[in-house]
Length: 219
Ligand code: SAM
Image (cartoon, rainbow, N blue to C red; front, side, top):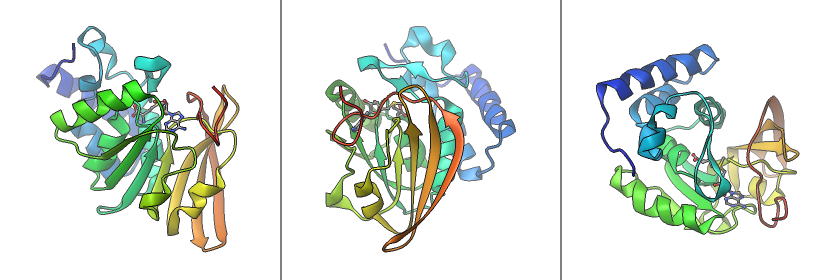
């Protein structure tokens, strides 16, 4: 059962978590504010409630994970979200990252490969007051029908950067994607500076569940 009560204890633990990720280098105030506002334990079964404010990834259904809070913050900071931005998230999972982006004022489109997770998120997120546009399917080639986007965030580890994702960015748009093998990926930021020009930066290593589908790893 999901616990929907946000007690003083939860709020206190959340405050500690925010200062922990701040100490790890997150400076974007909008990101920190969003993480302070969203009760992460709402995304956990009540029996695992105590793990919600540890800076760790945690298993959810369908063999997937809710990303580590620092990772959510790091990717959100790299995206440089401004209120009103149209953002595509590939890998809805628990829906927590999508809620962080909504809380930051973005118009969020999110797609999930695992049907059971999509079905859970589409029922649950509106109960929390969050209404990202949620879709079920393979997002490894993006979602061309709503392009172009100010930002695209991929929350699963990709073998390479899918060309379609760069095509679906606005000029000035940003793609944040972990790229590597099945165990470890480096965080890649791609900025589309002109129709046929990009700037690419590589950051630290992370460990995500694999991106599936046409441009991901085979099942
Ligand atoms: N953003 C999620 C959260 O806040 O809970 C993290 C989810 S988990 C680290 C990555 C998710 O990407 C998984 O739910 C997985 O099923 C999904 N995924 C993997 N390949 C995908 C694809 N091709 N299209 C859409 N979702 C995909």
